[in-house]
Every structure is written in structure tokens, then in C-alpha cells.
Image (cartoon, rainbow, N blue to C red; front, side, top):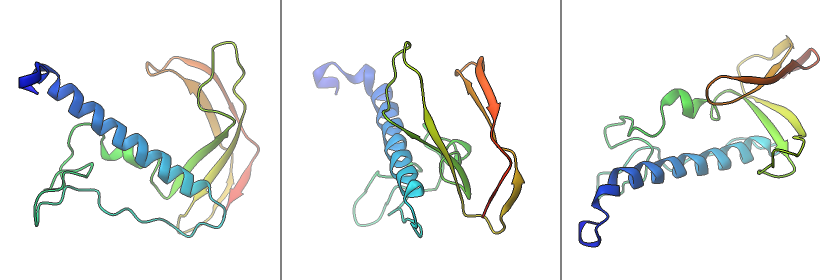
Length: 141
């Protein structure tokens, strides 16, 4: 990178590559969770593989430490025993369009979630709330 005068971008490019990796994992896992009758999924590995040559492929390093582009809590938002999911007609909306979504819950917990009133909120990264509400009481097996 230094030879091409890009060395100053190394940290930014590494971070961007890691964040893209997490977005790809998120898309794949959520697709699996939205698939009817899916019995589960398997990830090859979540940490870098240091044996027989090095494979820097994981969201964690070879010592199972975070690399700085996703925390365990962030990863658990889309890979947990209970995950809210939305089915959207498309992924990009303009500010003059109405967002319509079918909301589902993937629940693989030990016990059902009985008589739950799910709530929702649409907010920005600073926590400014634009809309919120609740769904009808329901049970998630």
C-alpha cells in the first residue's frame, strides 16, 4: 500500500472490510432465520485460523478477541435465540417513500414467549425517535 501511496488508508480499509464482512454475515443469517422450516445454520468459523498457514477470515482474531469492527452485543442483535426480522420490498428507500414491512420473530428459545406485546421504534443513530408503536399480544412458540 505504501508503494501506491495508500498506506495512510490501511486502518480505514481494514475497518471497512471488517464491517462489510459483518453485513454479509447479517444478511446470510437473517435470510436463514426468515426461511420457513429452517432447522438451523452453520458458520465455518468466526475466528482467524492460525494453523497450516494463516487464514484471517473471522470476525475474531486467533485468540477469540474482538478485532474492533463488531462487538459481541452487536453480533447478537441478529444472531441470538430471539431475533426480530422484517420483510421489505426493497432495501433502499427515498425520503418521499413509505416504508412498509412485514415483521416476524425468529425464536429458538428453550420455552415459548407467551402473551408478549412486541413494540417497535424507528430512530436514528443518535437515538432521535421518529415513530413507535406496538403490535397485538401474541405467543411465539
